[in-house]
Image 1 (cartoon, one colour):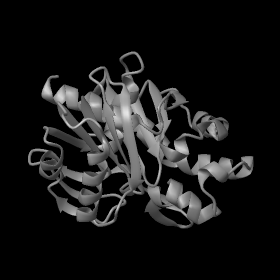
Image 2 (image 1 turned 30 degrees about the vertical axis):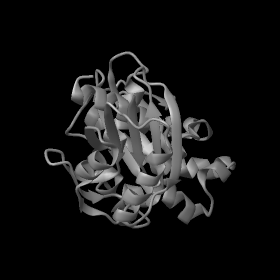
Image 3 (image 1 turned 135 degrees about the horizontal axis):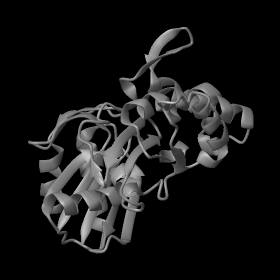
Length: 269
């Protein structure tokens, strides 16, 4: 059995997976803003699982800087955590080897496993914005750690991080509603235009065969795929062809499945 832990800016999902990757148990809880409270809460959640013996654990974290050699998450996108020894802490908690990685990279890895080998750009629009490039089912380590916080664009007359006007948190601040509550096509058109600004830059840099959109906002891609495609196509050139954009097949659990895929890869299981 394997354990997958998806640490998000607002919620955490912990799941037990069989050796073939099927989820048998899962629990969700609000992510505490205090790191030690998170560890304590996770210990309580793991104790609820009927399975206690894990071959390996994968954990996806919204970290923008990770010391992968020592398993330390140095800075986070939407959590006030700094220089946390998360790998060692989780190993002590669950009693198995632990592999840590940026959550968007694990989500992209998971989605790539459901498709033929290709260059896949994964975009998660949730509390924040994350992205990754997966090449033939392998994570490109040079793309994605910084997420949407360090991509700057002109918006409202000044340069601001992409995440500040296009993330799920920004949608609530700008429109006063969560994505699931928005039905108005005009509002979704504005959201699509904001998402497009960063996405076109990522497409130009990574030249993917396919763009997959996930996350709590990406789960409603059907509501804004038409305007998003229209805006992207409007920027197409002979040297820059727009790839197909499609929804994540497992938008809510992509990171958890990616934790499983990555742990198997890291530990050769």
